[in-house]
Image (tube, rainbow, N blue to C red; front, side):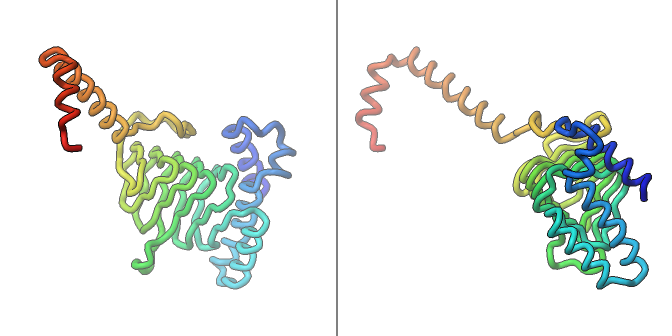
Length: 224
């Protein structure tokens, strides 16, 4: 237990520049408390003491704002930054060195039985407000953008954005833990910029070929 706690504190200090000391992390970070509660609840859950396990998990939710079902399997060095509104379902599985921001749901779709929740690989970063719903895998090293809604499998080392989630970068070089949530590709923005550039080119060509006064007369008589 103490080894896990030391690893949790070290993880926070490494990934959150706002954390200044071990004591601050122990006293002020809900991620550390939520994981401590979860390990107790998970052990009880696996031992068949499901009601007590659920009570501990619900108490943890009231204390930390993070709801982790005691059946969920969590790897090493998980960091839940801020944490409020995070929900992790019963059959969810989370690998090592994963980072989750506030408002994330690892949930089900309501139509699956048995394995109902996602499996998150190693070194995955999940942005604030993202929803990953269903019994599929998010591959190692992938990044889920803020507010993305992911409903199908994500290969390793990919970046997903949008609702519904779409892969905008595939098979990038593995970087370990990557906390950058700003420099994500935005294909829609790229298409809009390309269209704006094309419209400017056409307007310039029309001015050269027909003259400004001709274009103005056409616009004045147009039925808009």
